[in-house]
Length: 110
Length: 135
Image 1 (cartoon, rainbow over the protein chains, first blue to last red):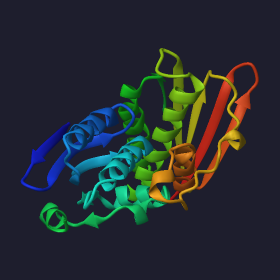
Image 2: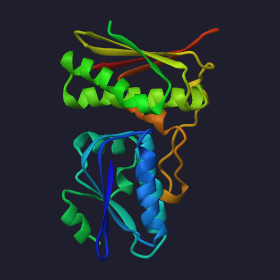
Image 3: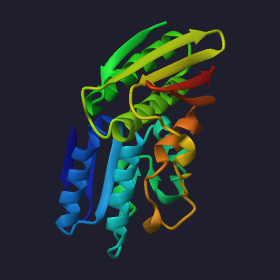
Image 4: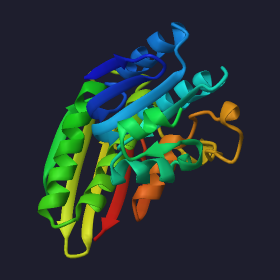
């Protein structure tokens, strides 16, 4: 389940449950829709994401690559669980990701 | 030993993970260790579907999990072509963001989250993957 909240400058994408090879295409579609629309300041609210697989990690990375190609663009993460942070760390990707403790803080970071 | 067989479809990943995670928790593994078992099982099954069977199909993945005093052991059986992990490039993340690619990431997560990982081809049959997580 993926929900997009469009705001003035920054957009928030929120997902819930598992992000694996079955569900990650839906997440990719949500990000692609925004990027194709010229929106590149993105927050991913992970407060209800229970599981993140490598396929989900790569959706985030590909989205981040595209977002950063434009001025001030980025994808940042809000509220990932400790288990998800560990997954990002195991994958060696923590240093590519900006992580915030709340959506408001993440939005304000742009 | 709890055992279950699933069709090689991505929609089954959640059920396979629930199967191993619930057994691991009942065996007394903490949340972090049970999540590690879930992650490794998810990545291994995804690789079996994607690379072993060449995509989603009605082929089988058999999953069993056994608990003992020291932790849990997950065994995955498939009936696909023999898998040689040495043929998978080691994922290199010490590169700029634009140069990153996902090849080998699943294997890296499997090895990083479990304490012991052993791939065995079963001649004429398929593959057996044995993964151990200590308490």
